[in-house]
Length: 350
Length: 282
Image 1 (cartoon, rainbow over the protein chains, first blue to last red):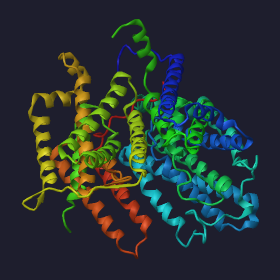
Image 2 (image 1 turned 60 degrees about the vertical axis):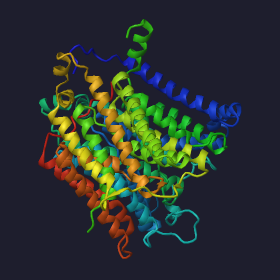
Image 3 (image 1 turned 120 degrees about the vertical axis):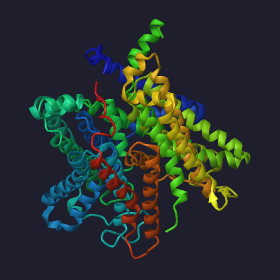
Image 4 (image 1 turned 180 degrees about the vertical axis):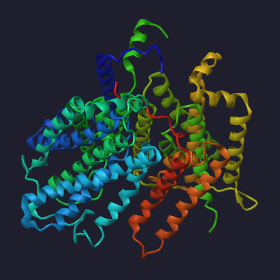
C-alpha cells in the first residue's frame, strides 16, 4: 500500500468510469465506421435500434431487469472482497432449478408453484455459488479459480440434462427442454415483447439489497471486507462466515436471473439461453463501482449499448459480435485510474 | 495408459508462463485467451504462408503484443489485473471469430493439409523442448540475479525500488514471457492437431493457473502437477468414449477434478495463494 494514498474522491471515481465508457464506446463506433458496410445507416441503427418500437423497448427493459440481477450478484461479491467468476454456470443452474420445479409441481398450484419454482432457481444458483464460498471458508481455496471452474463443470451437465429423457422435448428445432405448464408462466407485460411480471420483482430487490448493504451492520461488515480483508479480520469479523455469505447471495441472485429467463421469457430451458449474462453482469457491477444503487442505471446503459450492437450485427452491417468487443473494452478500461493519468497528461508531466 | 503428451506439453508451457508472471507479482489471468489466440494465429499464418518459421514468429509476436497491452492497462493505467485480463479473454475470441469469418467464411474449423508433430527418436520434439524449458526457467528463477530480482518484485516491491530497480519493467518482462509461453502452448495444441477448432484450448489457460499452485509455484514440481492434470483430462476423454456413461457429467469432469485437486492443494499449503484481491470499488 502506498502510505501517501489519499482518501478516494467519489467524483474522480465517477469521472474515471465515464471516461472508460467513452473510450469503450469510442472504440466501438470507430470500428463500426471503419468496417461497417454502410457506416451512416449502421450508426443510426446503433443508436436508434433499442427504442425503435414498443417491441424493442420491452425487450430492452426485460434484458435490463435481468442484467440488474446479475450486476447486483457481481456487486455483492466484489463489494465484499470476493471474486465470483462463475455467474454463467450459476445462472444456467438457476434456470434448471426453476425448470425442474415447474415440471414436477402440479399445475394446479398456480402462483404458489410459481413462487416455489423461483425459489428453486435461487436455491440452485445459491448453492453453487455458496459451494465456492464454503471451499474458501474451510480450506482457503481461492474463489477466483473455484467459481470459474465449478461454473465450467456444471454447464455441460445442464446441457446434457436438457436433452435427457427427464426434460427433453420432441420435435423442436432448438435444443430445448419441454415447455413448462401455462400456470407457471410469468405474465407478459408488453406483448409481443419479452417483458414479463418477473421484471417487477427486480426494483424492490434493489431497494432491499441497497438498504441492507448501505445501512445495516451486516452490510457494513461486507463493505469493510471489500476494502481490506486483513483489517476486517482484525476487527473480529469471521472471514469464514463472510466468505460463504456473499458468494451464496451472489449465486442466489444469479440463480434468480436464470429462473426469470425460464419462467418469464423462454417458458422452457433452451440450450445456452443465458450465455453472456454472467460476464455482462460483471461489466455492469464494475461500471456501478459495486454500488448496488448504481447498478440500475449501469444496467440500463449497458443493455442499451448491447442491444444496439446486436441490432447492427443482425442487420448485417458489421461482420462479428460487436457486443463482445464492447464488453471487452469496458472490462479492460473500467478499473483503470484514467483521471489521474489524463490529468498528468494535461499538465505535461510524465 | 499412454503418456498424455498432447495435453501435457501445452499445459506445461502455459503453466510456466503463469509461474513467471505470478513470481513477478502480477498473475496472468489472460493465459486462456492467449492460448486460444496462439492456436489460431499458428493455423492462420501457417495456412497463409506455409512457412513454419514465420508462423512461430507470428505466434510469439501475438503473445508478446497481448501481454504488452495487459501491462499497459495494469501498470500504466493501474487497472485491476484480473478484470483487465478478463477483458482480454473476451476480446481475443471475438477478434478470432471476426478474422476467421472474414477470411474463411466460417467461425468453426480451419484445417491445414498436414499436422505438425516433429519427432526425435520416437519422442515428440515439443515435449522435450517444454521439459527443457522448465529446467531453464528453474535455473533462471533460482540461480541468476535477474531471477532473484523477478522474485523480489513479487514479494517485496519496496526492496526492489530501494535497490534502484524498476519493478514495473520486471513485471512487464515477466508478463511478456508469460504471454509468449501461453501463445506457444496454444500453437502446439493446434499445430499438433493440424487444425483450428473453436474453443480448442478448452480451459487450459485456467487449468494452468491451478497447476501453478498444485506445483508449489516451482518449475520442477510444476511438471508433475501438469502431468497429473493432463492425465485426468485424458482419462475423462477416454471415459467419454463409453456410451453407457452420462455424457454431460463427463464433459464437466475435467473442470470438476481440477477443482478438487485445487482445493486439496489449497488445504495443504494455506496462505500461499494469490494475495487477496485489491478492493475494486473506489
